[in-house]
Structure formats: C-alpha cells, structure tokens
Image (cartoon, helix red, strand yellow):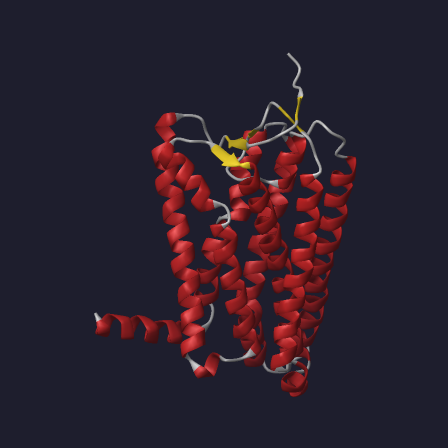
Length: 312
C-alpha cells in the first residue's frame, strides 16, 4: 500500500539506535553518562575561566562560548532520547521535531564558526603578537560571537521554515535518535528538491568557509612558528594552539566520518549510529582536550575543585 499525503502531522516516531529491548537499558545508561560528563566538563571550563581573572582573555572567552555551545548542542538531542527510552514512547510532536531541527542546526553551525574564530585568534596571537591587544579588542570578540550566532540562527530558521511547507506521508518513522534535517526531508511526499539544494549550499557556505578560514590560519601559524629561532618558542606556540587543533580535528573528523558512512551505506540505522560521533562525542571530549593541554586552565580547575572540596 502506497503512502498517502497527510494533511495534519501531529507527531513523528524516533526509532533510535536500536529496536532491541535488551540494549535499551545499556544505551540509556551510556548516553546518560555521556550527557552528564558533557554538562559537568563544560560547566567546569566556564566556571574556571570565570573565576580566574588571569583567564579573562579573548582565547578563553571563545573557549567559554564553545563550552556553552557544546552544552546546548547536547541538550537539544540527548534528553529527548533518554525520555523516550525511559517511557518506552518513541514519539516526538511535530512542533517538537521542528524545534529540534532548529536548535541542532543553530548550535552545529555555531560550532563551525566558533572554531574558525578561535583559529583566527590563534593566528593573531602567534603571527601578530605585538598587535594582538589592539586587534582582539573585547568588543570585537563579542561581535564575532554574536555575528556567528546571528548567521547560524538565520540559516537554521530558513531550513526550518522550508520543512514547515512540506507535506508528509503516513510513514512518519525517523530512523534516528533525534530529528535530523535530512532524515525528516526524506519522509516528505511533496517536492524536496529546493530543500536538498539549500542543504548543499548551506553546508558548502557555512561549513566550507569556516573550515577554509581554519586551514588558512594554521598555514600561516605553522609558517610563523617554523621561522622562530628558539626551539622553546616553537614548543610554546604549538602547545598554545595544540588543544584547539585537536578539537578541530575531532569535530571535522567525526563529521567527515558520518558523511562517508552515509555515502557508502544505504542503512539509515548505521548512519544514525555513526552520527553519534559528531553530535555527542566531540561535545563530551572537548573539555578534556582543552584542560589536559592547557597549564593555566588546569591550574584554574584545580583551584575550583580545591575550593569545592574544602567547602564540603
């Protein structure tokens, strides 16, 4: 029986990562642990930077922004999945699904822009150290973050409004643990060619341009570092940008892995499993990467933990 158009869509079904009831409790425990680690780790980064005046610099301001964005990105997907597993109810309302698409797109694109802004900050600090305080003024840092948020919001709103105009079939099962834009569009009965073109254009622009900026920045950074006469200076420079480069590699590496996986396999369920690698894992690991490779941040975290322990 062929699917028919549905005039009113009340809800979608999120099939999650597996239909095996025996694995549901394991997945619930795993994702709950990952979510709590993500929240705690990124909150500690924000608290450490906020409490230490020595860390009130552009680099740590952008790091706090990234940590807050990671919390928001994880919160837009994981809690709903945990609730569905706990209640054994796979449904998500139509408005809830559109809201999830909107917020996931905002924070995913904002992550791209923040990583590019942080790369620019590293570029100015290493390639133009004498002009750093003049170029990276506080108001410029705030404007860069707000502009990135504005562009991400406009793009997310555009995609969401394009989905709003679609009509859907009676088959409303999404083989994913959240309402991913591409998966929702596949369920539509109406013409989705404009939506697909918009996805490709937005991905190239808002994914490709920040990545190009990051690559451009690091080409100049590496060139400047290699010209330094002191080996100690080289080590310090690479150490300064090492954590950011690791975060960039993790985010874009996992994203590329999901894209390649979706291209070589026709299984939506396998694609949903690999998508965990870009939508959950980087946000959990970023605080560890930043804190382990940054001496000042580690010291600030020790002070926070020490004060908390003494208070208790």
